Each structure stands twice: as structure tokens, then as C-alpha cells.
Amino acid sequence: MDGIPCWPAMLLLALAFACDRGARSKVPVDGKAEEAIRAEARAFYRDLASRDTPALLNHFWPAKIAARWEPPFDAPAQSRPPVLSTGVVPRVAQGCGAGDVAVALADLRVERPWARAMVPRCREGSDELWFLEFNATWKIVHLALARER
Image (cartoon, rainbow, N blue to C red; front, side, top):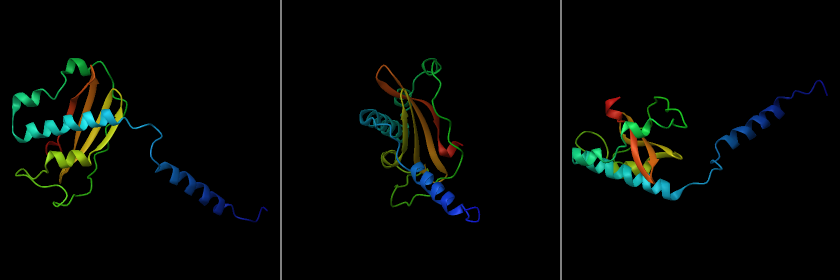
């Protein structure tokens, strides 16, 4: 037995762990929270596109509220996401896609009372929006637009 290499067994074990890593989380999806967050993000991008400053202010919690909690996850590494086809995300004058389509494609992580959305709206990268739920309402507490990084 000492002469038989153990690398095939190790390879199978490594493969088993790698397959499990790509599996979806066992945490149940909160459909109502996800729907509310995406609706808030769509409304934010609508007001951003129309340059309606008073309306934009209504999408944010004041820093005084957000300072009470620490986000449960780290900020993502600064990497360039794959470039989206203009057929998938329609372009606007500034070179970034329409908010509604991009929000539908957003990578959303919810860990109440926090949520982070990576919205693939621009060729330069994704917008990063952090939301906080307070009094049963989701609003933005941190915003990093891809164009401004």
C-alpha cells in the first residue's frame, strides 16, 4: 500500500469541495426585501437620470442613522466586471446603461438590516450601492458610482 500514490484520492476530495463551493447559499431568499431594494434602486436611477436633486435626497438615510450599525460584509475587491453588450444594457448619453435594466442584472446580497447591490451599469465597472433597512424601509447609505472611482 505504501507504493500506491494517493494523489487520485486527493484530487477527488478537492473536486468535491470545489463543487460544493459554487453551490447556492442555504440561506433562504427574502423576496420581499429583494423586491423593495430593487424598487428603491430603480427609483434612485430614475431620479439620477432626470437630475432631480430634491428627489435624489429622498433615497438616502442620513449618516446619523447609518452610523449605528456596522455592515456585515466587506467591500468587494476592485475588479473590472465583464463588459456588457450594448444590446443587453441600453446606453445613455453619459456612456452608462439605463438603471432599470442594470438593476435587474444587479448582484444583490441581503443580510438584514444591510444589503449591497453591485449594479453593472457602466463599461468602467459596477456601481456599488449599500442599503440599510430602518423602520421597515430600505434606503441608500453608501454610493460609489463606477464613473467616479
